[in-house]
Length: 152
Image 1 (cartoon, rainbow, N blue to C red):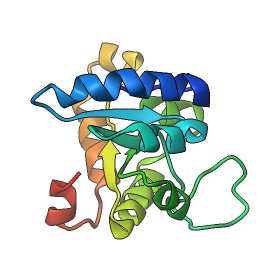
Image 2 (image 1 turned 180 degrees about the horizontal axis):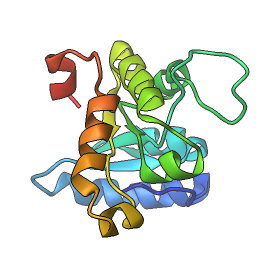
Image 3 (image 1 turned 30 degrees about the vertical axis):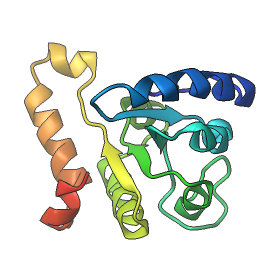
Image 4 (image 1 turned 180 degrees about the vertical axis):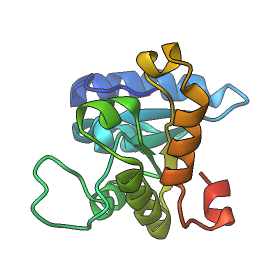
Protein backbone atom coordinates (compact mmCIF):
# COMPACT_ATOMS: atom_id res chain seq x y z
CA UNK A 1 0.00 0.00 0.00
CA UNK A 2 1.44 3.34 -1.08
CA UNK A 3 0.30 6.04 1.31
CA UNK A 4 1.18 8.87 -1.06
CA UNK A 5 0.80 12.15 0.88
CA UNK A 6 -1.23 10.76 3.78
CA UNK A 7 -0.67 9.91 7.45
CA UNK A 8 1.17 12.04 9.97
CA UNK A 9 3.74 10.59 12.38
CA UNK A 10 1.02 10.08 15.02
CA UNK A 11 -1.31 8.42 12.53
CA UNK A 12 1.55 6.23 11.33
CA UNK A 13 2.33 4.97 14.83
CA UNK A 14 -1.31 4.11 15.49
CA UNK A 15 -1.72 2.45 12.10
CA UNK A 16 1.49 0.43 12.45
CA UNK A 17 0.38 -1.03 15.78
CA UNK A 18 -2.78 -2.41 14.21
CA UNK A 19 -1.50 -3.46 10.81
CA UNK A 20 1.82 -4.98 11.84
CA UNK A 21 0.08 -7.37 14.23
CA UNK A 22 -2.39 -8.39 11.53
CA UNK A 23 0.41 -8.98 9.01
CA UNK A 24 2.09 -11.44 11.38
CA UNK A 25 -0.88 -13.78 11.14
CA UNK A 26 -0.84 -13.95 7.33
CA UNK A 27 1.22 -16.24 5.11
CA UNK A 28 2.36 -13.43 2.79
CA UNK A 29 4.72 -10.47 2.64
CA UNK A 30 3.08 -7.08 3.08
CA UNK A 31 4.64 -3.69 2.61
CA UNK A 32 3.87 -0.03 3.05
CA UNK A 33 5.23 2.90 1.07
CA UNK A 34 5.29 5.66 3.65
CA UNK A 35 5.89 9.41 3.17
CA UNK A 36 9.34 10.65 4.15
CA UNK A 37 8.21 12.20 7.42
CA UNK A 38 6.63 8.92 8.53
CA UNK A 39 9.43 6.55 7.50
CA UNK A 40 11.18 6.38 10.87
CA UNK A 41 7.89 5.73 12.70
CA UNK A 42 6.91 3.10 10.13
CA UNK A 43 10.28 1.34 10.35
CA UNK A 44 10.18 1.42 14.15
CA UNK A 45 6.70 -0.09 14.19
CA UNK A 46 7.28 -2.72 11.52
CA UNK A 47 8.23 -6.16 12.70
CA UNK A 48 6.20 -8.01 10.07
CA UNK A 49 5.99 -5.46 7.26
CA UNK A 50 8.35 -4.25 4.55
CA UNK A 51 8.71 -0.47 4.65
CA UNK A 52 9.40 1.34 1.40
CA UNK A 53 10.22 4.95 0.65
CA UNK A 54 8.07 6.49 -2.05
CA UNK A 55 10.98 7.86 -4.07
CA UNK A 56 14.66 8.77 -3.88
CA UNK A 57 17.32 10.75 -5.69
CA UNK A 58 20.27 9.04 -7.35
CA UNK A 59 22.83 11.49 -5.94
CA UNK A 60 24.04 11.07 -2.37
CA UNK A 61 23.94 14.80 -1.65
CA UNK A 62 23.64 18.15 -3.37
CA UNK A 63 21.31 21.02 -4.14
CA UNK A 64 18.18 18.94 -4.75
CA UNK A 65 15.53 20.71 -2.69
CA UNK A 66 12.74 18.42 -1.55
CA UNK A 67 14.52 15.21 -2.52
CA UNK A 68 15.77 12.41 -0.29
CA UNK A 69 19.03 10.54 -0.82
CA UNK A 70 19.69 6.84 -0.62
CA UNK A 71 22.05 7.29 2.39
CA UNK A 72 19.22 9.09 4.19
CA UNK A 73 16.94 6.13 3.50
CA UNK A 74 19.62 3.72 4.71
CA UNK A 75 19.98 5.66 7.95
CA UNK A 76 16.24 5.40 8.61
CA UNK A 77 16.33 1.65 7.94
CA UNK A 78 14.27 1.47 4.77
CA UNK A 79 14.72 -1.79 2.83
CA UNK A 80 12.72 -0.96 -0.32
CA UNK A 81 12.01 2.12 -2.44
CA UNK A 82 9.31 2.80 -5.03
CA UNK A 83 10.65 4.29 -8.26
CA UNK A 84 9.05 5.21 -11.58
CA UNK A 85 5.56 5.76 -10.19
CA UNK A 86 3.18 7.16 -12.80
CA UNK A 87 2.58 10.27 -10.69
CA UNK A 88 6.33 10.94 -10.50
CA UNK A 89 6.68 10.37 -14.24
CA UNK A 90 3.76 12.66 -15.07
CA UNK A 91 3.97 15.45 -12.47
CA UNK A 92 7.70 15.54 -11.70
CA UNK A 93 9.06 14.56 -15.11
CA UNK A 94 10.77 11.36 -13.98
CA UNK A 95 12.14 9.70 -17.11
CA UNK A 96 13.29 6.17 -17.83
CA UNK A 97 16.85 7.53 -17.56
CA UNK A 98 16.35 9.01 -14.08
CA UNK A 99 14.48 5.89 -12.94
CA UNK A 100 17.45 3.84 -14.17
CA UNK A 101 19.87 6.00 -12.16
CA UNK A 102 17.71 5.57 -9.06
CA UNK A 103 17.50 1.79 -9.52
CA UNK A 104 21.27 1.45 -9.88
CA UNK A 105 21.95 3.63 -6.83
CA UNK A 106 19.45 1.71 -4.69
CA UNK A 107 20.88 -1.66 -5.71
CA UNK A 108 24.41 -0.43 -4.95
CA UNK A 109 23.18 0.50 -1.47
CA UNK A 110 21.41 -2.79 -0.82
CA UNK A 111 17.92 -1.30 -0.99
CA UNK A 112 15.42 -3.14 -3.18
CA UNK A 113 13.85 -0.99 -5.90
CA UNK A 114 10.14 -1.43 -6.56
CA UNK A 115 9.85 -0.46 -10.22
CA UNK A 116 6.51 0.94 -11.37
CA UNK A 117 5.62 0.88 -15.04
CA UNK A 118 2.43 1.60 -16.90
CA UNK A 119 0.67 3.64 -19.48
CA UNK A 120 -1.56 6.67 -19.08
CA UNK A 121 -5.25 6.49 -19.90
CA UNK A 122 -4.60 8.37 -23.15
CA UNK A 123 -1.85 5.92 -24.13
CA UNK A 124 -4.17 3.02 -23.32
CA UNK A 125 -6.99 4.52 -25.37
CA UNK A 126 -4.60 5.04 -28.30
CA UNK A 127 -3.58 1.38 -28.18
CA UNK A 128 0.00 2.21 -27.18
CA UNK A 129 0.13 0.22 -23.93
CA UNK A 130 2.52 -2.49 -25.07
CA UNK A 131 5.00 -0.04 -26.61
CA UNK A 132 4.92 2.30 -23.60
CA UNK A 133 5.49 -0.56 -21.15
CA UNK A 134 8.25 -2.10 -23.28
CA UNK A 135 9.99 1.28 -23.60
CA UNK A 136 9.71 1.95 -19.86
CA UNK A 137 11.15 -1.46 -19.01
CA UNK A 138 13.96 -1.16 -21.55
CA UNK A 139 14.92 2.34 -20.44
CA UNK A 140 14.47 1.85 -16.71
CA UNK A 141 16.52 -1.37 -16.68
CA UNK A 142 19.21 -0.34 -19.19
CA UNK A 143 22.73 -1.63 -18.48
CA UNK A 144 21.65 -3.56 -15.39
CA UNK A 145 22.84 -7.07 -14.66
CA UNK A 146 20.24 -9.86 -14.83
CA UNK A 147 20.76 -10.68 -11.15
CA UNK A 148 20.06 -7.06 -10.19
CA UNK A 149 16.89 -7.01 -12.26
CA UNK A 150 15.84 -10.35 -10.79
CA UNK A 151 16.05 -8.93 -7.28
CA UNK A 152 13.70 -6.06 -8.03
